Length: 129
Image (cartoon, rainbow, N blue to C red):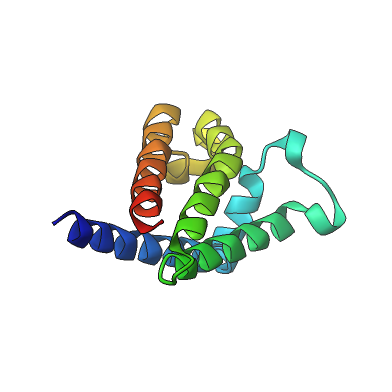
């Protein structure tokens, strides 16, 4: 039963990360995501906010695909690191709901959501190793 649950969770996470990754390439969504990058992380050139949005989209797509391959444990742990790395943008948006509207999920629910995703990814990684 645990293995069936793990497979269902893996498939759900893969679909979630594939959908989230694809959304990074929708122009209106990408502009909003770029604006969510905190000022202290903003750079020009290769690490510009828009380029970071595209890079994180590619990371989510690769992670989602990776969850469906024999590299599942590596993909799951890499996605854990990814979720930690992008959290500052989510926290910044949470601090500015007047600017980001419904994208600005309040801090604590966002943190709980991120931790839940991390827990599910660890569940997938541990059972697949």
